[in-house]
Length: 356
Image (cartoon, rainbow, N blue to C red; front, side, top):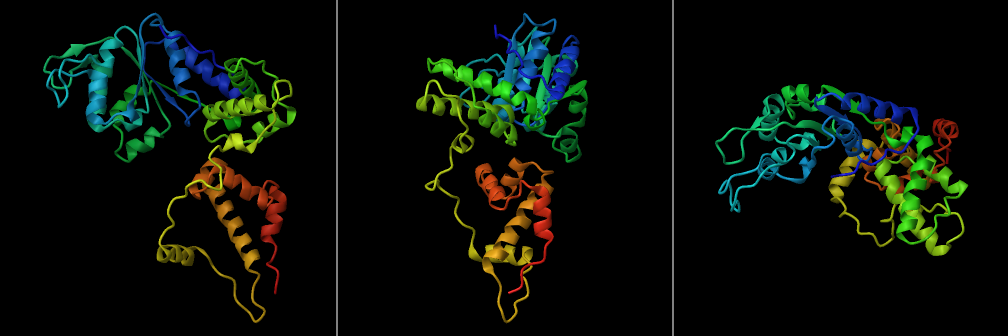
């Protein structure tokens, strides 16, 4: 039997989500878990199971995004011999395996309309058919599902069934991103760092005060999963240098891909690039004295960065992705233009361009 993982964190937002999950766990109803990638949706799914009356039954996890329509149908509901090429024998599906317990459907928004229709039936009536079969089978399964997609919007766009959303959303647990759980970051980092030290057969010296500050100031677009990777990398790198000194922060742990030799995507055609530049850049008037090219490039970079941050509601990770940059590159531009000092930045950008 799978052992439950103890959730880590003391922030108000995280404790509120845990309390909500604990309260609804006792009810034998579907629950929808919403959150950005890496926020702990699977952990909440486990909590819903192990605090329910089904705790001693099976807990089955399925990643709906990992399989195409036919394979997901077979994975969830099973198939009969000869149902498709390669189906050499009958296969029992995950819903049958989960009978008497809970099934956790991760990335539920990626399920196709046909699979969604079968999910609606099994949630509503406890009935399903194996792929290629005619017999109607029954099961007694509680369903919890997770996604990082706004499902009401997906419904309005015709990408998700409204009736299935109604059935899944008896209660909706929305998880806070790590960037609003600042007080939990040091606790989580210590947990992941200590675990890495044990794996290396060493004692964990802890993170330095400056490292903790750097971790707390990071935006964490990948949330707890990203923090886990970074804390483990920092611990590995730090223990290689010294087994006794506190572990210091390094930008290399944030972006392990950062390298002058990193392969880059092919450049767009010159004509397309010029067309986009003509549409976006309003060049300054040219006078007899000319212009300062570097200054104009600097102003344009600042405008792009600020526009991306505004579009992404201040989320630096998403702004970097929007601009086609790595998070490390984006942070480098912020430092280059001193854009962490918002007041100074506003005054500087609003100042008139120097005349030449």
